[in-house]
Image (cartoon, rainbow, N blue to C red):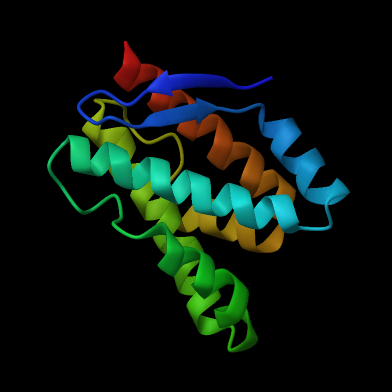
Length: 135
């Protein structure tokens, strides 16, 4: 179901996940896996950025998770975190020489309004980034 990929230039691994598996596990665990997944993808994006010498792809995945969990009580931090995570994905796509498939605003709207659809496209694009940088 998932394949580990070495992130070139860092000692860390990324994980190519089945987007439908992410959605299914999030639903089955009543959102718990979604929080774990959000941490992991932000960590992978930060590792790609560090390997390429930039902080544009994020630095601290814990901050992103706190923003979408505890920050959701205020709403604004969760919204900002989701948008910035899509921007980080777009930066990572550029760092590996791929043209972003979906802009951050469009991806954010999909994730915010149609959570599973946005999650699917996010994971699909992250898989492509991980595979491109590993090649």
